[in-house]
Image (cartoon, rainbow, N blue to C red; front, side):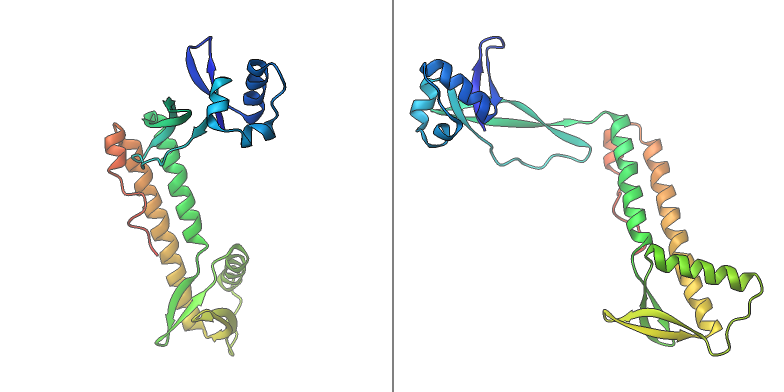
Length: 217
């Protein structure tokens, strides 16, 4: 990117290569292509009112802030874009905070859950397709369909390796309890954070809320 001087505003402005080429062409009296801008030395460009624009490393801001351009500083024959962190409005910050916890909750709901069955740990998938199958099975059993005497095989993972695990009725109930508990805990954490966000009176109070902690893994 480049910087060109705006007579109207009396300040240097960020300029695209095409605009910088136009400014240089007018000042030079002859066309200066975008390709030429890339290779010409800084000392030539500055004579045409064009400077290469550098972007500095930017320190991190506080939560609920956004970065904004704060001006262009001249450094010799080059220019540097400066930035500043600016507080969001409280309403916007709350909206984004709630969107963040919604995303976290949604991701946790579809994360595999590890459940101990007879002393061994198994990872049960919680993706939409898997949870749909669990829901259909639970619905059938609650409507009076008997649990098969020889059990039901489920897709699980052991140390990342997929396999089939046949569960009896008691083991299935252990799975249902673990999955339900996790869903309840996620929903409770989500609700608690939403209430905390609603009750925050300013950005300092909002920043004090730990949006990442307290979730069921």
